[in-house]
Length: 164
Image (cartoon, rainbow, N blue to C red; front, side, top):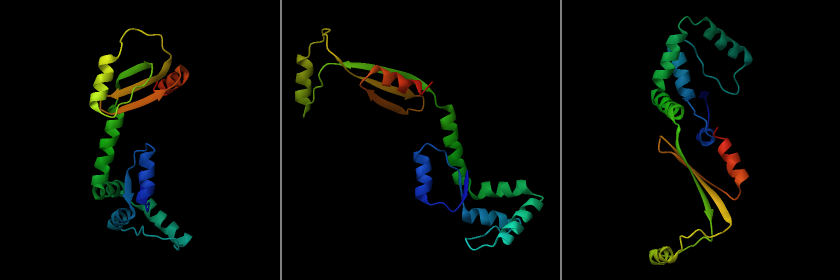
């Protein structure tokens, strides 16, 4: 939960790192406090004495719950989005883990006809070819999907253990 002056870039960075962010912009904080008789406005030049007075006003406020409700009301859209995100992250679970050990030489085609021709000519007998990589696909109940590729068994296992 953040309140005050934050740039869109800093909020997006937190979100991109996987943080759920509930943000109350400075203006809505000042407006909510003002409704309860507290001047919460400040800037870099605000003297320490004035900060102390604002904190004392907050400490003496008999209706802190009312102020909290006002903050929630003024930021209803952000609060709703945050709780939807929170609900999704708490209720998300892994439905399936797909492991594809891939052997053999990769084939790349520039068109569909070449790709079909490759499949038609490909022998499905069990040849003794070296392991190329492990493809791992993790599917969640929310339709989210994580895909990863590893050249060796140890790194594939290490990756999967992060989900235990």
